[in-house]
Image (tube, rainbow, N blue to C red; front, side):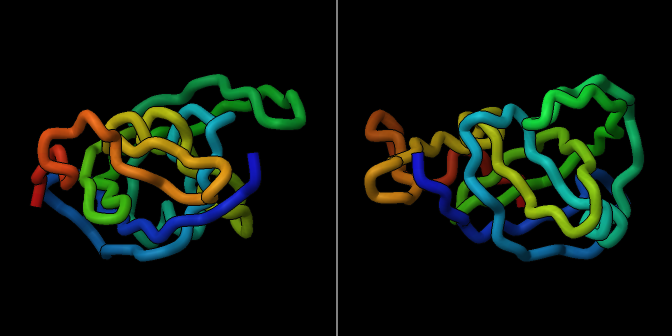
Length: 128
């Protein structure tokens, strides 16, 4: 599948929501979670909630901190956990946030398309 990016908006989830961050994220159907570089994690003010072992594309196993993020992908909003990746890396949108926001990946068109079974074709969750 060809690589492509989409614009996303991120906010720390919780009562003390921090700065909103807008950036482009690489759609990566081989990834599972939302992965954010350290600089974005700091800007959002994310707090670690647990450590997990993750396997990277280079088959390296590491411990990564998770934080809860309100994620807006092209107007569809969800709350997901994010793993921290090294600063300078591109944010990655994995399968879970794509599923949570009900987007399908069109590899030939290199874009996200709404699930045709969605009732309204819009946001499934309104967490504003």
